Image (tube, rainbow, N blue to C red):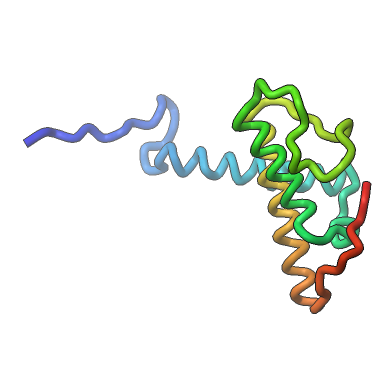
Amino acid sequence: MRKVRKKMNPPGMPEQVPVSKLIAEDVLNDVKNERRRQMTTAGHTPAGDDRYRHGVLANAGAAYALQAANPHNNTVPAAWPWRHDLFRSTTPRRDLIKAAALILAEIERIDRMTLCRVPDTDEDATE
């Protein structure tokens, strides 16, 4: 019978906490911090997000995710819903954090619309 080696945590890291759990917590914190940055620094408030309809925020998130999958692409992904000069790709990891935060903003918007019973209309907000 083959002996299975236990994955060891890096030196200085507590043994009782699996590395994968710590990494997942770091990623979730990065997404939450990016969402907070979008609201506080960039001024993208929930009220402003509520102006968007038909998955505009999800499309923006998809654009960053697509860019992360193909970082050498020098064109703005077709999913990007706004002016091309507003698309600011950096690194694949950072683009995925932005993507997740934008998708989170879309989920929050849908939840608010559901609670308020406001249907998506044909009037999209533009930037």
